[in-house]
Image (cartoon, rainbow, N blue to C red; front, side, top):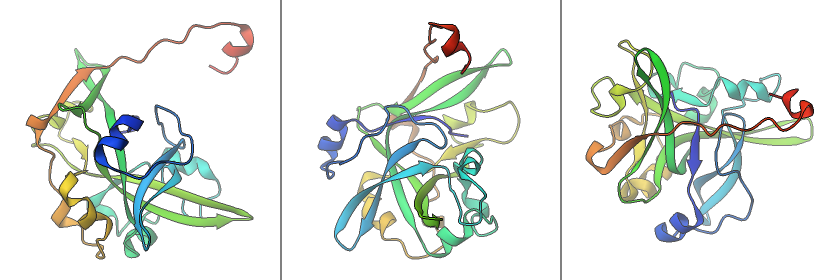
Length: 219
């Protein structure tokens, strides 16, 4: 399941003709980090800074995002974390440069990346919501996933077995359709991305040197 990705770069944003992003975000995103989400409003395409991982109104705290960053399309209407957002058709897109998955080599997981061959950013289908806890307004979103047991690229990832998942990639030309979709039934968008337009590569995480005992405390 995708838990780590790099959001689009400024160059990729300009290439796609998207509005400027007025807030800062990290160049690598993990669950409960904040990321730029693209959605459609009455004014056109807009960005919102949201938590990676759905944080429903009933949740005790934001740590639930560590469990809700992926949302299976098959069970959106059955899961308490997602039912409010999907019932109200709150669909958005996470434009990413590349995302990471685990590939098992000799029964050991390795981090591999997936990106477009042409270097463009691509849109991952997302579900988002907004709630208020006390005086704080919380915006959050989850990637929507699909079965990938037959996908020529994504079937090679995740733990050995018959459960393989993939993010849903919205083709560039279908972005307006997706952002304006007004039905909880998103089956028309459930299709694997064209593997010949993407590439995967070994992407081990860079090791961070331990500089001091104080930093070691937080490892």
